[in-house]
Length: 177
Image 1: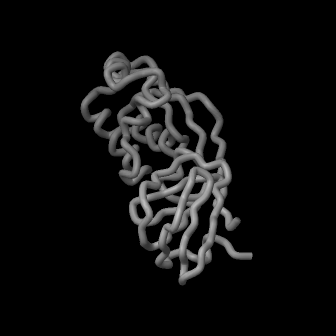
Image 2: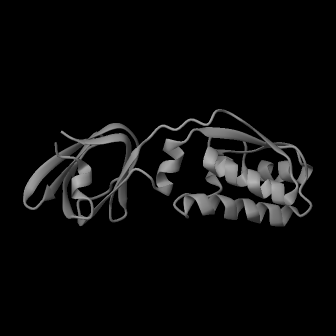
Image 3: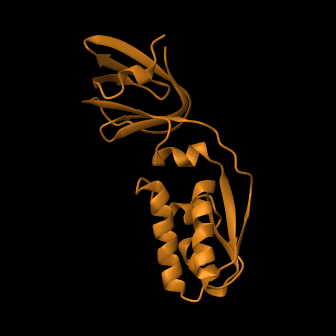
């Protein structure tokens, strides 16, 4: 059975794509790969590039791990340093593939101003993030002697990432049609 992994690091040409599939030209043959439960995509144009396939990558964290809601329960001694360390802690996990503020402002019900206010008063919601990020935040809270509480279960749902240059697709499964 032919799998997408068989073409890792090969030069491919994007012939066509839709929301549920992509067609590559590989060594003058056409191959269609379907996206099962596509979660995210950044496909903009037909181009030639190296095919990269991942099952573990910083872009996958948002999809492989469920989110936990995080609340702060005490004030940091140095708010500015604490916030800077939160940014560093998130970037350490995402490797810069995601904006660290997304975990504060997207699907959280708060904005950055509320985040700052909650940290300054030492009470309230500060983020919603994948559990590996929350675990990293927990370590930095120990360092700053800040108490946090998080809610949610740590559940892993494997996804796959397909990249060609700066374009990508994330789906639960990418398989040959």
